[in-house]
Length: 147
Image 1 (cartoon, rainbow, N blue to C red):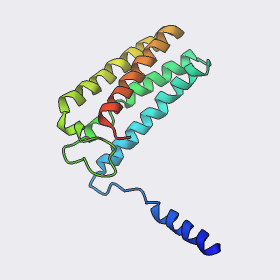
Image 2: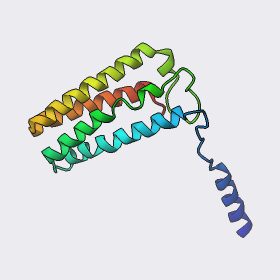
Image 3: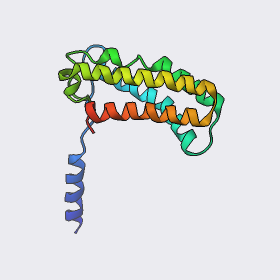
């Protein structure tokens, strides 16, 4: 029985793989992934605030402004030679560049609207703008990000 357990454990552990590292100069994939994670660390607390009914207008506005400040960070790291592991970007980022750019522009417009809404401090306006920004992110992820 011990042998069976040890074999099962060995098989399970052998299937665990070490994450692929970005070893290219400047680490463009890792850099853009980090930038997206930083934006998410700003964006998600806004959604949590709205979902939990704990809307804090001043904090929300500060987070929306921080999102605007960070939103440019990942895009310059989608160079032609950056479609390699550990990327989660689909090849469509490069084969449908015009559509990818339109998705980026939609995100920029929706984040602009989000900041304007946050400045009104009106919960309904803020909530609607957050939903539009969320939809812009989700839509881009559906088209251009691997699950």
